[in-house]
Length: 503
Image 1 (cartoon, rainbow, N blue to C red):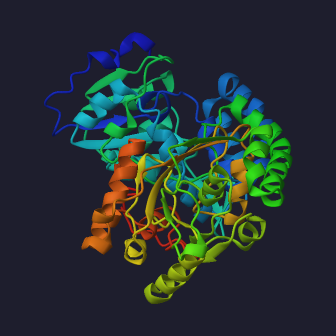
Image 2: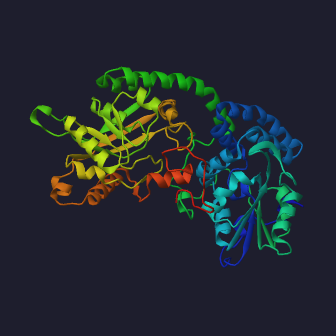
Image 3: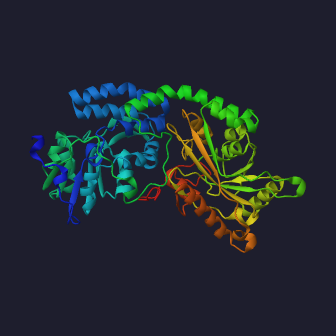
């Protein structure tokens, strides 16, 4: 069947489709990108690390040759084997739920989404492994049915092969559609290549999505359910070139990270700012911080109330002040505590004990706290715990922002001891520390305000400074969405069916 046998997507009306069924391909149709390599690379790196990513890179030329000159199915099978072989199915599912949606949602084709979202019943028919795409499609896009390639497993691990009928391309897509809908005929079929024609011909209307690499993606914040929480170490989508750069940079970046961490841990705090600049770490300080508390006058310490971006927030606060500021934390790894240049005190989650501990620390001097209890990467602030507001009226809000070009310095999955290393492995990471005005006494608990009013006010002030949005989400919400636990112990994921991730 000729390519021009179907009209283009821009000719498809999207009004009055509420009772219609749409069936769409994924790569090149619902998504702008025609290649699924970046998403296989994300699974490879997040589950198997840099060596698995290297293996995928070495296999990708073979996959490309097979895809373009032998068969589409054979090329995809090579990608599946290179990425999945030997992996735990639960790990693949975890990445599919916590990592991939962020990247998928930033690549939605605007014309395809206009038509797809206008229909009452939505189905996606894809050659991608169903395990990779189902969480994103159902939880964030409201897709009713996902028909994709099924991977073969053995004792909870992927073998790297696929189950019958094999990779869904060409006539196998049409068979999958027939099996899913029986004799019913969907109203709209959307595809982007000749191997989509068989299933498109089974629909009442078929439309082609022509390749337009420069078309702007549909804004992810306008999707039905925006992403607030997401996980994974990679900042950018790992295209083949980016994946190669990551593989080459990791050994260099790790050595550089060790140097930066050693400089922060061993040098006097007044010199750390300059050492960081010499090693490519940019620290920008805004606002006027208060002077240190004077013990001789019986003055109580100031409590710096910080927004939470990484576990390094208190360290960069200390760098900006030029003096070490102790910090109270919910949970950090033993390694992070060992290499930290400042004193860290663990909160017990017992309200009375924690309040007593914080009061004693404030009697000794200034203190830093991140009342969100966990980090958030997106421009949102989580709910502020109100405990800190009850303990002192000397409150200074601090807005923290960081920039990373290659690796995220936080993760809900995996070992948290690597968080500082990943942050400092970025070629030129940056932190911006903004000191806001000290809270007036009339806005504190000492003047009759409730602790929740004070906490909410500080949250709003920091959010306004950063142009962020306030939310009521908590630490437990984040870890249940991303890791299937409450963030205190590593357990087996226990996802609730159809639970929306990070929304």
